Length: 156
Image (tube, rainbow, N blue to C red; front, side):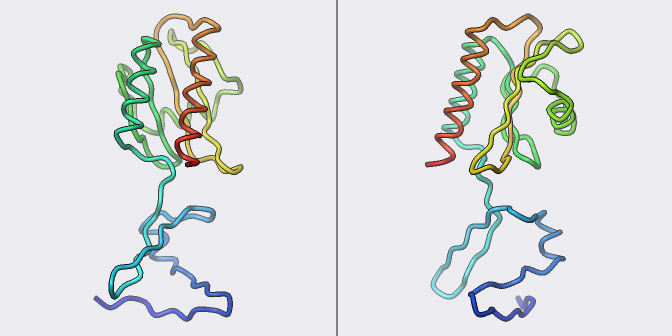
């Protein structure tokens, strides 16, 4: 397969063509994974926040303990959801997150706790915990523990 030919500049940089960035939804400040096999350099988009067994166990455990639904997402898609009885699409959660000014709110007969996941000053995603009855102060603090657990896992 023949691709687009690019020169490397004096600092070892290359420009990824706009068509490729658009096709793979690569934006400024996104992370790329650069690896190689015996004959090729492989560049792949890298998500700091992605579904794996640890994330599933963590979300499931917190969801069951809080008797709540949890939806985890990065900047582009839902990563994982557990017990999502609203069953909404990604845009619903992103719009909800963008419209809220506080960490905790009652809205349309549901109570929500949300947290943004920020790594090195970059917003990498967030999660929303919700159910149809109020959260107490201890449960709100437990949601902060989930946030800290996710950040520690991503940073390692």
